[in-house]
Length: 77
Image 1 (spheres, rainbow, N blue to C red):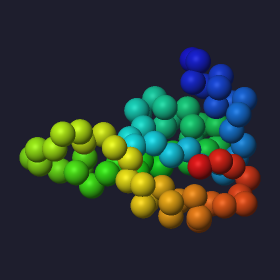
Image 2 (image 1 turned 135 degrees about the vertical axis):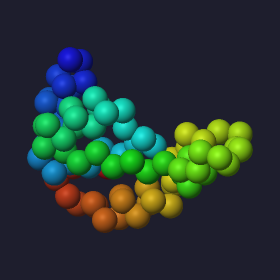
Image 3 (image 1 turned 90 degrees about the vertical axis):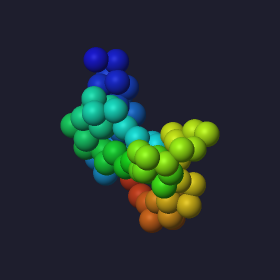
Image 4 (image 1 turned 60 degrees about the vertical axis):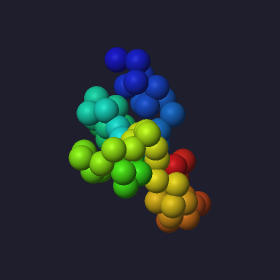
């Protein structure tokens, strides 16, 4: 309920919300309020069998591309 209140207040239609991986409820709250939830998990996070120190990082190159693509739009990435 809190997330829906936040997103209904701060999101404008078409806003982009980036994350390493959105929880289902977070994505639902973003998208039901007109935003676009983008998962930008690092490549090692997509390979379950791969052993890595931490697999929850955000792909910073994908984040840079996303920020460039959505620069000057209605929302924040």
